[in-house]
Amino acid sequence: MFKQPSRQALLCGAALVCGALSAYAEPDELALGKELGYPVAPKAFQMYANPYRVGSWSALDQVSNVKVRIVQRPAQPLALPRVAEPPAIRYRYGFAERGIADYLERQRVTGLLVLKNGEIVAEHYRYGRTDDARFLSFSMAKSVTSLLIGVALDRGVIESLDDPADKYVTSLAGSLYGSTTLRQLLRMSSGVTFSERYDGKDDVARLARAVGGGPESTTEVLRSQSERHSAPGQKFAYASAETEVLGRVLTSATKRSLADLTTDWLWKPMGAEHEAFWCIGKDGQEVAYSCFNATLRDWARLGLLLANDGRVGAEQVVPRAYLLDATDSLRQPDAFRPRNATLYYGYGYQFWLLPLRERTFVMQGVFGQAVFVQPSSGIVMVVTSVWEEPAGLGTLLVHEERDQLWRGVLRSLGGSVD
Image 1 (cartoon, helix red, strand yellow):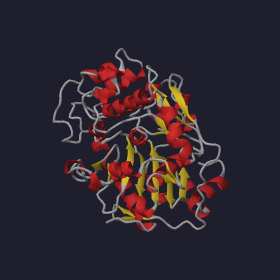
Image 2: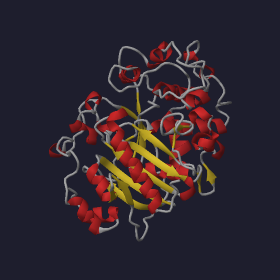
Image 3: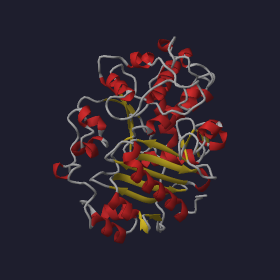
């Protein structure tokens, strides 16, 4: 399964554990393209087919009709040392106690990394992936967009989160999204009717077709949403269009690309190890709601930045006050708190909030992408996946087991699960 056992032993932290991992086939490996070498899709629309998922979602820049814009790394990355003696991580699921090896053998995971206070406790790559693979974020990109909004606000490029979007994006003047404030967009509470069912017939599919070169422009799709299901700011309703508007606010306000902003405001200050990239649409705009790509360790470095409340050493990279507003459930209106916004999660400024006493939050993308963070314990967990279903009832059980793994990580490493 792995061509270099000694490399795997290093990543796993114990040869015995790694030997156990290599003794079994990876879940659905044949359907996912193992015998083909996990190929990259010839065209972007094919990347959702199982034989192409693993290859495409870790190297989207190699798909022939995908255009990208590079996010530059610094000259010197922030070190992520490994703990000398990794503690055993255990979790309970299905009336049994399990470990990380069990989780990897049960779920379609391409990468998993756990940090404690900036040290690597566990790092695993599956389906032939390596540490330089740049994993597609899907909607984890929304949280990256939010962080850029926070920096822009701190620098005065954006004057107020209570400004309407059309103050910055004049092409949306007179539209419902244009009249929605940035704060309402950050909480996905515009009230604008936008369907996101992932069935290929919904509004998000129409938005994706516009981004990818369809007959409509992205602006036309955003302007065409002409009904509200509720008053702005009152109700959480997940809608990728709201993040896409925020991305356009950033580029209009700064006159710079999202890639340039990510380079200067996040990637270089946080000490990234590898270049990242944003995919760009037919209008040259980065796809703010779903298309940021980075290595597993750099996703972990971003999680570490969040765990440190936006600081790297003495430098405040992302304003702490904004991060607290974005990720603290107690700072949200009641309708956006855990078990109110959804049956389980709350929602902040493009971050999902867990129902725990200690501030705990997660960046999430469909098909199983996540960065979990608990600042008080210094624990970060990154998981990239190729789940069969994007979201909804079809992912209920895999979501449940991943949540139990996260709780097991917290228990095993001294975090809080109350």
